[in-house]
Length: 173
Image (tube, rainbow, N blue to C red):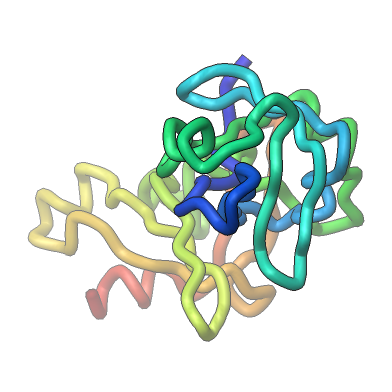
C-alpha cells in the first residue's frame, strides 16, 4: 500500500513534548486524539491536538528531549485508509488517483499528470508532455488548471483525463 504524506512535525512547543504540526492534507480532521500514524521514525499515536496553536502531543513523548527526536519527521497515512475515512462527492478526486493519468484532447495524448500544484488561483495539473509534442519543440511540461472549463471528464478506471483547451495551453507554453 502506498503511503501518503499527511503532515510534518516541527519544533517543540513548551516543556511537555508538544510539537508544531504542519498539515499537508485536505483532511485535517484525521488528526484526533487516539489516531495513529506511521512516521519515518516509528509509529505515533496522538494524545492531544490543539488546532488553534497548530500543535500535537503524542503518547509516550513527555519531554522536550523526547519530542526533539521527531522534529521534521513526516506522518503518513495510506490510500485505503484515506478512501474509507473520507468519502468524496461527485466530481471530487483524491490527488493520488489523478497522478499518473494520461491527458487527452480530441483523441490526442498530450502527456501524463506527474504532479498537482496548489496555487492561490486553484489546483493545477503538472503534465509531462508526450514525446510527440516535445519532438515538435513544444514545452517538456505544462500546467492545466483543474477547472471545468479545461477538464471535460476524468476516467479513473482508465487513468485518463479528457480536456478542452489544454492543447492551446501546451502550444502557448
